[in-house]
Length: 153
Image 1 (cartoon, rainbow, N blue to C red):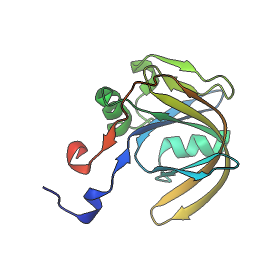
Image 2: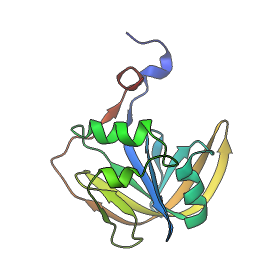
Image 3: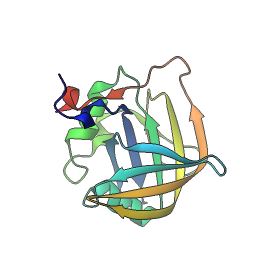
Image 4: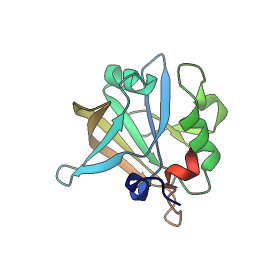
């Protein structure tokens, strides 16, 4: 049963990660979209008080990782806990992306490495726009996780 028309909007579940020399941060996000074909760009909406948003503002880079539907526990770890209190990457296997050296969770279907090129406030979120500088399809047979409010909250 749906509680709101907003519950009918279909979105994926993604890990957004970023880092500086001294810190890593990441969170689960559903508000991700392609914002340009040429050049390839992606946008993600984040709460401005999130640790991941703060680190992204410093580093000017981020990744968007497509979770497989079998990775619900990882989605919960990155969605329910703050990077201020928990080193989420110490609880999962991960590797560095090729170009921007961002933390990528093992087992994701694909990832995108983005350089931050713009941001604008949108209500209670900030939309970060990134230029895709590298992308990898890691599991062509994976099935992306879908977000439904009733499955998460």
